[in-house]
Structure formats: structure tokens, C-alpha cells
Amino acid sequence: MNTKMLELRKITGDNIDEIIALEVGEDQKDFLETTNLRSFADAHMMNADGIPATPIAIYNDEVVVGFLMYIYDTLDHESFKNETFYEEKCYFIWHIMIGKEYQGKGFGKLAFEKMLMDIETAPHGEAKYVALFYHTNNVIAKALYASFGFVETGIIQDQSMLAIKNLDRNIKIHY
Image (cartoon, rainbow, N blue to C red; front, side, top):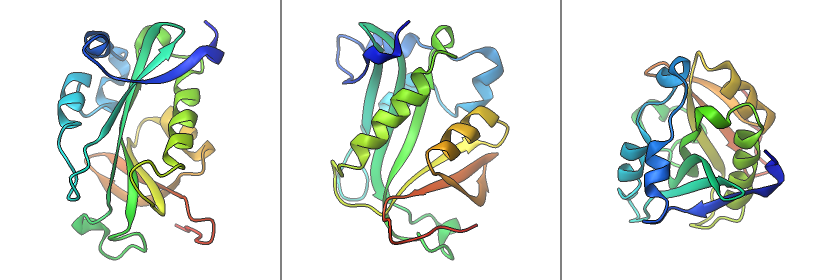
């Protein structure tokens, strides 16, 4: 498959069944906290400012190959209280997955790059950071996120590492 035709599209009644049907391999099931169906349902919850999450279908040509979701929110969890990013606005990447039959073809990396380009346009408002959690045993995710400038914070919740990318070029993150 040619990754040059990769597109991020809105999830609609026409493609939701394809999103729900996507699965990761057995060896990756521990890396995702929820199913695509549950994540899509969660997407309709809103942040404190009333902004819902942004669920997106990942297409290669006309085939759904994955799903991602992010939300514009505030990094205000109690465990972040002593961090420089505490109470700062951010885009939080809530879910990203590529279906097992489409993995290893570069779709995840390209979709992630396209999502970050979208986030950098501040579609819901200005933010200093992009944040995400990934399972501490997921070495592929760790390498992918590091290649895009995400820095591990050392904060681990439920076997998942919090990593942050700085969107403000004037602020440096060191851990």
C-alpha cells in the first residue's frame, strides 16, 4: 500500500462500523486502555470548557486503516501539581491505533505527523503542550513519540508514561 494517499477524515455514520471493527494484534491489546467503540463514545464527553474530543478516521486510499483522537484540555491532574505544565492548556492525544493488518507500513507515523500538524494550527485554542500516555512496555510507541520531540516526564499512571511535546519554542522541557 502507498502511504502517500493517507488522509485523516471525520468519523461519520458511514465509517463508524469500520472504525469499531479495527483491532490490534493480540500482543498489543495491553497497550490500549479501551476499545475503539469506547473511545468514540468517550469522544462525546467534553472538557471543562465544553469542547468535545476530536475523533478521526485514518484512511489509506479509501480503506480505513486506523483511528486517533485528541482533546483540547488543561493539564490539571493532581499528580501534575509540581510540574511546570500544571494547569496549562494542551492538546491531549487520547487514542491512536492502526489495525493489525495495516501495521508496519508507516501509516501510524504518517497519521501521527498529520495530526500534530493539525494540532499546531490550534483548532480549539492556543496551547503550550501536546501530551499523551503510552504503555511503558510499548517500545515502538516510545520511539515514535520521541522522534516527534515528546519527552518522558517520569510520571507513570497505570503502567503508562506521560510524555510531553513543547509547542512553545521559547520553553524547554527537561526531565
